[in-house]
Length: 286
Image (cartoon, rainbow, N blue to C red; front, side, top):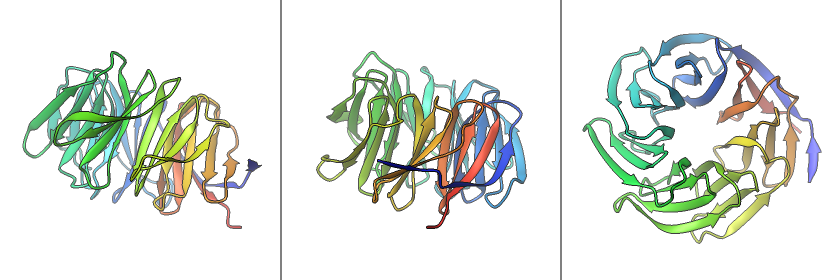
């Protein structure tokens, strides 16, 4: 593995409190801090467009596919407009660790401690299903066609679910440690744990690639739109970029605290840290 410091900071932005989640969409970058403040930033510079607040313990923020709605998950799941109007609210029985929009922009998958919930936000319908493990579900994603989703639990189990049946039909893998994050991009599934970062072919579920260096303590991953670049980071206080085509890893300078989340956008990527900062990077041209 070849390591190279080729990540360039384009700009930075600062929050009021330690930041835990970030996403990107049509309206720009959207981040969430540990006090429930939601920030809407420009994706061309460090300009704050708006700041909202949710009055509950929140863990994740996601923009809808068309960028018109902001979903926040935690003690409950709410959907807001960029102006702060609440259009949906659901008080879940179990804490929501991750939320994922379906491709149609009409449903949300809530990954919860005790199971999953598919929420139809415009029909006020919630379909819940329990997990088959006593360990909380902590990561997940929806397939590009919206027919399946994948979950990962704190005991390392990764399962593929049918949306129609609302139950798992395949165990993809069993890691020796907690699953930290999962992404389903194009025809590939990316799974991060303390053991390894693995890439699977979603057609036959064979392993396409695996990285073990620097993944221990990582808390998130994000995949470029073409599926060739992976960023990840966490308790090591650095961001790592894995070029899966050339099998090269690039690392950032050290942050003052853990790197909590990151997202790709327009060939760049943004990350947020528990030190209250956000940074936007690009991989320097060769």
